[in-house]
Every structure is written in structure tokens, then in C-alpha cells.
Amino acid sequence: MSKIDTNSLFSSDRRSLAKAITLIESKLDTHRKEGQKLLEEVLPKTGKSIRIGITGTPGVGKSTFIESFGLYLVSKKFKVAVLAVDPSSPINGGSIMGDKTRMELLSQSKSAFIRPSPTAGSLGGVSQKTRESMLLCEAAGYDVILIETVGVGQSEIEVASMVDFFMVLMLPNAGDELQGIKKGILELADSIVINKVDGESINLASKTRSHYTSALQIIHPTSFWKPEVQLVSALENKNIDCVWDMINRYHKEALKNGEFKDKRTLQNKNWMMKLVGEMLDIRLKEHPQVKISLPTLQEDVTKGKTTPYLAAKKVIDTFFE
Image (tube, rainbow, N blue to C red; front, side, top):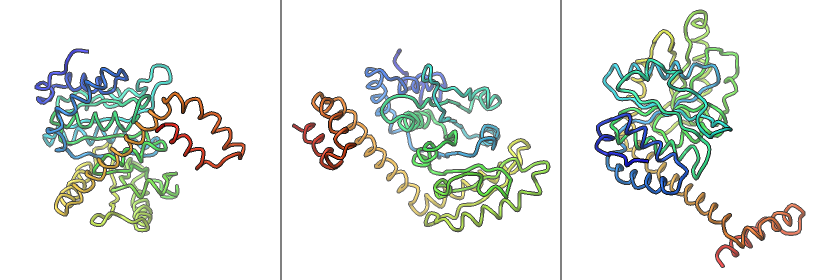
């Protein structure tokens, strides 16, 4: 792979940015080292964007909302990057969702960059690749980073742990008992945005809003922010500006009281320790003596011949011998 031109990257050249992300997504050791060196080089240019996570139930219209929201931000002279956390193809490990076909108008804008993030593979999985892609987008001068999750299981928690503002999209069906969204996800939400408030759904919208507002009151918000419920129609571009106004209010307040900096500091610390744990796990499993003793110890635990604690202690003792 040819060397990344950092000057082109810093001047928002989309081709250079795409190449840089391809480099950090590579599983080759040489590319991984080059990628980490590049990240270290661009680090002083990062951290100036606002990072927004977006999740929601299937059929809620995430792609339509993101495109509509992205186009609104572009019209306000912001540069927008969309990183979509996708499931990986079982065949080649690449992304199987065609984001550029889903967000055709936004992808044509020179002020937007859209990139799916394949989840398969190496150390850190989706989190590492998305976090590092996010840093590269910031270095390339993107003001707003939108991180979309497919809304399946662990990916919402992963995305919430790397963004400044986490948004849950819902449908205007008040009787659906939170539409299968787990309470844990609502605890992470800084806002619920009810999409598809158009046509016959308009009558349901106020009831739905009341339903979700009540649900959010039970959940403990952050010290300074009470999660809000917004009604929008991405299809009709209705109230998209209200969502941005809300995020702006959150951002200004978080900057003012220090919560913004504290949150990012904690995220970076937690991420570092998670990587330490994963690196140790890899080294542990690659250790020749551990490889030999591990199957026997696992069998002894399952048969009740020893306790999990004693088996784990033997693994660690073997590793450090």
C-alpha cells in the first residue's frame, strides 16, 4: 500500500481519507504498524468534532434520517462523516450493507464522507476500527461524525461508549411497549427521536412522545441533561433542525460544565484498558505451555475436579513462568 499523504488528508481529500481507513482496517502486521504510526502523527489534529451515535429498531428509517440530517448539516456549512457499523460478510469479511446506495444524495456531497466499518477480525473488532476511523475523519477536518449502528445487541453499547451524544430512533407506535428496545439502551440515550411522523402516523405521535417521556423519567439521566423526545419526518425533512438545535444545546452545556471533556477522558481510559485486556488475552492464548495445559484445565473445571479460580491461577502462573 502506498504511503498516505498527510497533507492531502489534512486538506479533506476523500481519497486520502479512504486509503488511510483501509490501512487501519488491514489485518496485516506491517499495515497495522503503519496505521498506528499514522494515527500518532495525526493525533494533534483530532478531537475537534462532535461525535453522534445513532441506533434504532429495524424499519425505523435510520438511513433516511441520517441522509436527511447529514444534508441539513452540509447546508449549514458543516463537513459530515458517516461511519456505519455493519455486520460483516461471512465470505470475505467486508461490509455487506451498501451505504453509498442507501444515502445516494449525501454521498454526492463534497462535504460528506460515508464509510461502512466491517466488524470482522482482529483486536478490538468493530470498536477499534470505528474509533480509529473517527480519529482520521477528525484529522481530515470533519466537524460532525455520525456513527450508525445496525441496532443489534452489543453494537449499541459499543457505539455509545465512543460518542458524545447517543440518539435512539423510534417509530410512532405508542402501544408497542418501547418496541423491544432494552431498558439498558434507553439508559444510554441522550435523546429519543421518533421518526416517520407523517401521514396517518401524525395522530399517534403526541401519544408516543408522552409514552417515551414517561419512560425516560424513570431512568437516571446525566447530572446536567434530561433526555429529550423529538418528533421528526426524515422523508419530509420535518423538524430535522430541531434535532440539531437539541444536540447543540447539549454540546454547549457539556462544554460549559466540563462534562464533555470528562466523558471523553473516561472513554479513552476505558478503551485503553479494554485493549490491554484483549492484548493480554491474545498473548495468553498464544503461549506454548498455556496452549498445552488449557484444554485439560477446562475439562477439569467442567467435570468439577477443580474450581475456576484455581484453574485460572494455574493458567496465569504458567504464563508468567
